[in-house]
Image (cartoon, rainbow, N blue to C red):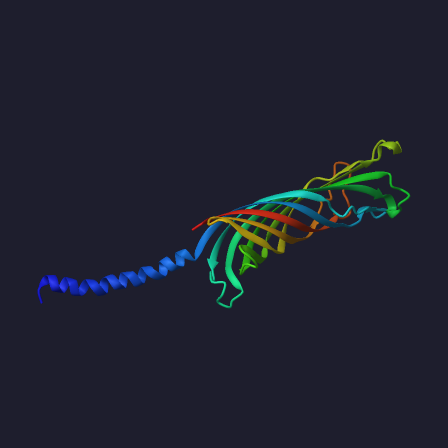
Length: 255
């Protein structure tokens, strides 16, 4: 066998091997992508506030305004893997993704203080501010489109939240009380948090997606400081914090 014939004979299996090695990688690349998402939303906070224990002789109750409504912003990155792009293959699942999301919002509420837990002694008002940020490991499962290009999905996430609690109270202006202000130093809480959500997304183009979802987040119980310039509380104020969020997301997919 001469050289030319041997080269032709050997080149066929070599080329076929390269083709089969590249084919799975090409198919894999076509079925997965990285995505970057910007988030904006409207946030309703549920707060449950404990009593204000000033001393063994005085425990005040804080009228619970049950949180407030605030805007939320965030961003996220994720890796998405297509499970199938065939709507007629019998499976209800379309793709799955895993990523990191970062969100921030500030909550502020104010209401009355009942001295000695008696509503007749509502001589003070308090203000509670919670500055929150969280980093979440998020998993999302997309279903086959319901109609046209509207894709339902569910998601769950766990992570760490940073909540700075700020509390102060002062006499009501018309009560004629000259002192009695309490201005606690800020306290930073690091909390385990989890979220559950569901929504819909649609493709605006092959690389741009728009999503609308509902997200429930539980931050657990955060606490204020006990220290103020005028006094030291017997115990911190405890605040249970949960949020309900209507969330809009705009994603860019890097194929």
